[in-house]
Length: 303
Image (cartoon, rainbow, N blue to C red; front, side, top):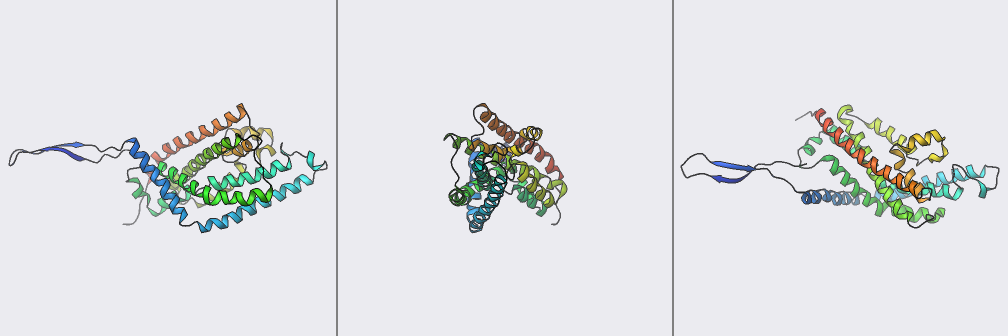
């Protein structure tokens, strides 16, 4: 977003003579300047969350409890089958893979989670969005870079501590092929972008609905199910898996975790990541389109 601020480039005027002639040159920020500006929001977001880091220590405990609850539930489910435990396969997963699925799903969620929707909704409700609109940047891009800063904070002070606790407690092993670690990390980065843009789209609804607290709560419940963090999609009928495969939600959890488990190799791996990337770009463009129309509905009260 380029702001045009008139500056006097040259003024020619004779002393006591005719009218002054001013040449106004528009101010433009080059791409390097824009990049430096937006990268500064990554740093600011990291420092903001660093100031409240103590509350994330309780999150390590809660996420460990989430993993433990699901792990013991699936252990009971596998143990209920009549065949020997080593031969049990549910949804194409054996017990060790199922426990790994649960652990990696929640570990990944601790990295990709953010509250862009609540932040944007609050700014709209409180009228703070007016100040954002007059600043020389695009709010959507700023929020994406702030999400990156939050993700960096979460990775260092939330995700890694969770891994330190969960991996040895539940005996989580690595992927079957070492190169899948890099693909898993890339997939989770794309999941971060997808989640951020979905949240931005939800936040934009506040321009029309004013209060979207109920929508946000419904979104959290729906995404926990549709992303596969609660139940792997392989547990569902084939028609449901086919439909979900073309939606952005499986890119939040199911795709990265199945890559880690080695369930996606070769062409299947590449196509899954490409679909993630397509949704990341597509949702960003839809967010641009919706923002351009939503800001026309801005109403401010008070003085």
